[in-house]
Length: 480
Image (cartoon, rainbow, N blue to C red):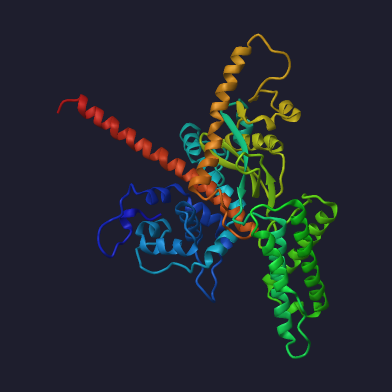
């Protein structure tokens, strides 16, 4: 790894060794990444030169840390020598290291599983260092250097005591989509179908007559209701029925031109398939007079997004991924991620087992809210693990002491809520701007990784500050 003093600046000077990007570059085990995941970035003898995994992951970290889009991220890298050092470049050069369109490919190649493992390396670095300093030097002892987790020999030799606290909670990571309504979705579907009809007719121009779509009438009927501030349920149902009939007519026209749909662009053909399923769902809900259906589509561009009922005061329903995380010593780990809604209480037992795999022992206490206190979880935590919350059964003699413990647990559990707040306010966790399902999962993994890097960076700055204060105190106490 090149040092800041070795980084060449054509305009003179040297990089500051206490700069945040210099310190972050030293925290990430780049050599482990290159050794394990370089196969995903194969060198090609033809075409464009391959980009290293350090540049790929480094650019994504920069983007999530600064909250910029793909183009602005490249501009920042172009203008900032510290960012170029963070990417592993040997010298500053006013030239783009790659094209901004490659950022999407980076998000596809560095999936959620890879980022979860990198996050484990970063968050458990301090634990690995303490194990290396206190453990013996015999072969097979200590942690596994490749993963940072306790080795099998160490797990077998360790006495399984309970230590530490495991904090659990779940939230929704909303996708960057407009708030979906049945009327707006059907209007959007109708407009896309009309565009497909225009493209298909262009292929047969002069041979057949263009089908009549009544698009002006349909648009006028949509705006007559959409522009109203308050719409009565009967008027809304009537407007939805009209749009359903327009969409049904357009789908029949496209079905008659089925032989030519192979000439459609890939994106439009995919949207056509989504619209067919959307029409089926909307027609079913219209006929049954209901507003719920399984695997409901709320976005034509992102059909994988699902509604997640949260029951919050500001937003009862959010649209995105449901994410369950655990927090240990201020570091966040992804436990479960799904586009479909699920009961987060089911993730407790797996989270506890992963805690043991990371640290070599079970937690002393699991701090979670009421939804985690199921019978299975209480039975699982009965031996040596305290699950936060009120105890079942009659009040005992030490009821006051238990209330005091419950109050302390509730205060400690605020740390996981703080992680959600930090991610949503500072790192884009409140609006996932990635378009695809895979890239959205990658972005969430990156945000957790960046939060853990910032946690370690704050700890490093605090250690430096404490060292400076100690040095100042010694100088004041010892006469010159």
